Length: 310
Ligand code: NAP
Image (cartoon, rainbow, N blue to C red; front, side):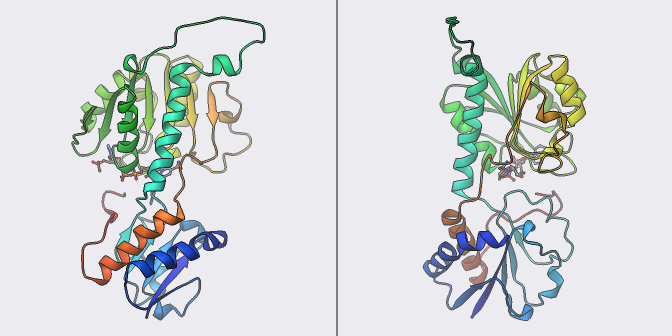
């Protein structure tokens, strides 16, 4: 009997209990039980969200793998008590949600929708909206989520470039990598979307120097992680018009403190870390498949590279 410990916020259990049991049944892994509590020596797998409170994995002597419910693993990857494989979440629902959030916010800025939504009653001022083919967008991070967004924006006709650690090839996307690649990518980016993980190498990737490389009046959209941006440098860039607007979903401190200048800056839109969410029905299939693979001695999917930090 495999014991799978579900360690996340208690309200998550209500959402995951049925889909997870269903997906594990379907995966035909043999007898199993999914529980929120179990004798530690009996635990084979942990389905894990960091905000569930568990931090010491050394107390599970027979643990085979940790399966994160989150795509971003910056708070888990340095946990030295995890000595078994650690898989992060790659989920079609998460991907779809991010694609829709990013396309929505890009279109808002591209079409200048605010002018109409917040327009003056009685003022009839027609203007010719721009076309996607005349707009350059850079996606920093061409992984699961960045690729989905790049493909969707390219399909709409935008001129899309992207940046990743290792060289990539994506149809319809001009791909860059390395330090020179970042500079080239930013130089043309009227809209820049951050979908990098939070690692030592990516923290403050948007700073005073890199923000200065953007064309004047660029838009910054960050659904990645808060530490990717030097907040003070962004505020300064907004104040001098180098950045026209920033739409931010993630922050160094969450919830964003009430006195943070982002809340009241006219050039900033704050969304409360809702760009995309792991969906229990599809995420459960990914977890079940990974447990099936581990039990069958096959390579697990979406393993975290502890050295790279993501
Ligand atoms: P992923 O598949 O691991 O992709 C990460 C991308 O970033 C890869 O293309 C990677 O390059 C690139 N990268 C990493 N370090 C780099 C560096 N030093 N220089 C240049 N490129 C670098 O991750 P994902 O699933 O797309 O998720 C991306 C992030 O989105 C997550 O880490 C998480 O922080 C965030 N997220 C936010 C929400 C939300 O609701 N706001 C929801 C889910 C996820 P390679 O291709 O060379 O590996």
